[in-house]
Image (tube, rainbow, N blue to C red; front, side):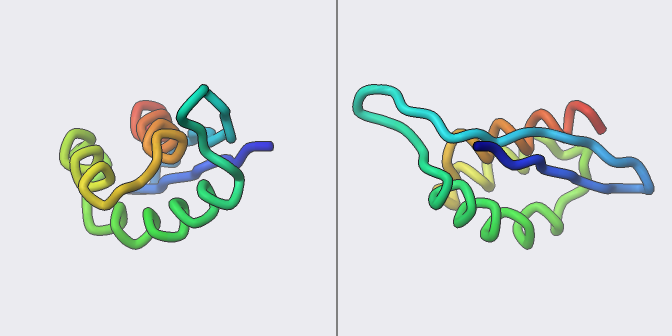
Length: 79
């Protein structure tokens, strides 16, 4: 299963995708991704889409998992 992440800024939409994965010792479930997406929405909205590095730093500091960070990164590059 996966989630499509849609970010809009200045009337332009960027898309990314977050998917569950399993690596020995690591991994992210659908429940973790849902939780991280809920936390990420309000945090990302305080930045402009051109501030990719600041957004990435903020998500890491907030404990957002790799799937959601990657999805937001994809959406920002698509933007």
